[in-house]
Structures are given as C-alpha cells and as structure tokens.
Image (cartoon, rainbow, N blue to C red; front, side):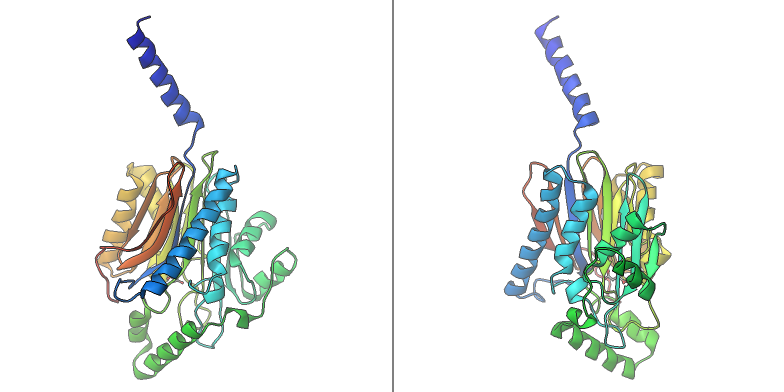
Amino acid sequence: MTTAKMLYLGTVLIASFTAQFCTAQAIVIHGGAGVITREGLSPEQEKAYRIKLKQAVDSGYDVLAAGGSSLDAVSASIQIMENSALFNAGKGAVYNYAGQHDLDSSIMDGSTKMAGAVAGVKIVKNPIKLARAVMEKSPHVLLAGSGAEAFAKTQDIELVPNSYFDTKRRLESLQRAKQKLKLSSWNEVDKDLSIDYKMGTVGAVAVDKNGNIAAGTSTGGRTAKRYGRVGDSPLIGAGTWADNSSCGVSATGHGEFFIRYNVAADICARVKYKGLSIQQAADEVIQKELVDVKGSGGVIVLNANGEIAYSFNTEGMYRAQRSEGKPAQIDIFGQAEKITN
Ligand code: ASP
C-alpha cells in the first residue's frame, strides 16, 4: 500500500471513530432575554452577571468533564442561577399580584423523552430539583401548587419560607406594575409588562459524553401575575424540549406566545423533519414566526454533536456556553431586532 493510501485510510478510520464514539461534550445556559443594553447596565451589574454566568456554565461543564450526565450538568448550572438574586428564578423570583412568589420549572431527558415539571410552587428553594424528582420518582410529568409541595416533602428537597425569595429590586417592579394596572386596562398593561417585568428566567441545555441531551428551565414567571397564571417554562414543548435525534432547547420570553407557538418542540421538529441546522430552525421560529406576531424572547439550542445556537429577538439575552477544548464564552448584548411590546 502506498503511503498516501495509508494516510487516507487512517484519516477515514479516525473520522468514523470520532463520529461514532466521541461526542463533543457541551453546555449552553441562559439567564433571560429582554431590554438588556450597554446603556441600561452599569459596569458593576454587567460584571456581576458575567461572574455568575461563568460560575453557572463552569459548574455544569465540570459535571460533564468528570463523566457526569447531561441531566446532572443542567441541574447544577440551573441551581447556581436559582440561588442568585440576579435572575428571575429561585432567590430573585418576581412577585405575583398578591406579593408572593410562585415558581415554575421543567426538565427533559433527550435519551428517553422522560420529563418532569412543577408549576406555582411557593416554598421550594430549587424548583429544578423538584422537577427532576417528578420525572424520576413519580409516574407524572407536571405537578402544580400545594400538591407539588406535598410531593416535595416526600423527597429530599429543601423547603424555605416564601419570604426567602424576597428582593428589593423585584418588590419595586411589583409596585410599578400595580401602579400601571391602576391607570390602564389589564390587556394594555400586560403588553407593556411583557419584557421588562419578568426578565431573568434561567435555562440550560447540555450534551454528555454518551451523546445524551438534557434541557431545563426555571422561572418566577411574570411580575404581578394573578389567577394562577402559568407561563411556558414548566410546559414541555413550549419552554423546554430535549430529543437526542434532533436537539435540546430552553426558552425565555413572553410565555403566552411560547405556549401558543410550542416554540421549543417546534424548533427541534424543524431540525428533525426539515433537515435544518439548529441555527436555521431557531431563527425561523424566533426571528420569523414570533417576530410576525410580536412575541418577544429567545432560545438556547444544542444538538448531540455539541453544536450550539442562540436566537433572540430582544435587545439582549444573558447567555454562556462551554464546549470541549474551548474556554467558557459569556455574552449579554446582541444586535437583534427590537420588539417593544
Ligand atoms: N417565559 C417566562 C414566563 O412567561 C418568563 C421569561 O422567560 O422571561 O413565565
């Protein structure tokens, strides 16, 4: 055999080995989308977000690098953001109309298509942990309110008083929102509140060394929400989706649109059935379908090869990613088309 031929055969063998046995481990996270501009964020605030996003993405990546599962990586990253007052999830959750906090979360395993979710829980420190317990320890997908909390008590889940989630910043948002509600109709105020009063939902999508994708999302929902309003974040297909054969998605934005457009599952369906890349699929849904109806928000997307995509139609989206052999990348601002309602 000639040297050239041997070299060629060697390359083919390495390429097929890499494709079959070496999945590139990767994780992508978000901390919400909205009117996030350089002018609107002080250098100190920007630094605080960058530090927390890096800590969250690194902790998820460390799980993957140690051979852990994508489910563990997603849970680790989300818990760090839930424990930070910077985000509208866990500790920094927005207030509902009654001055309390109701938390929503979901998680999905792309290898089995198993999923777990909780909606409207008030005393669970890390809702993503409870969502996972629903997936792994119950026969159900979605548990809500006091029933979900009763289930939490049967599991190894930390409970806290609702006041644990209080923050001055979110209380001021509630007061401003209630002021607006006095002056205008509910529908008008709702449009106005769609971006600025809920920013900071968190999410993560990861792929592990076995090529298994997991996705999760956690939020406090929208400021001044009432009548048991639930958004897209705990709804499998709307705010969270994972399927090894197409992609994993976590969404953030105006939940009512994400529910009606079934955003997370639709993006992966376009990958699966139209053969689009994850970037093309995400852009079709976020920059076209949603922009056409003025639905604001964004998504993080990842596939089993470890490719990562973002798409958002707001001014910014807190986001970070880390892949094998590359340093963590943290981004906040963007050039996206601005939606103002
Ligand atoms: N999607 C969340 C909700 O509507 C909020 C957000 O992501 O900003 O509850």
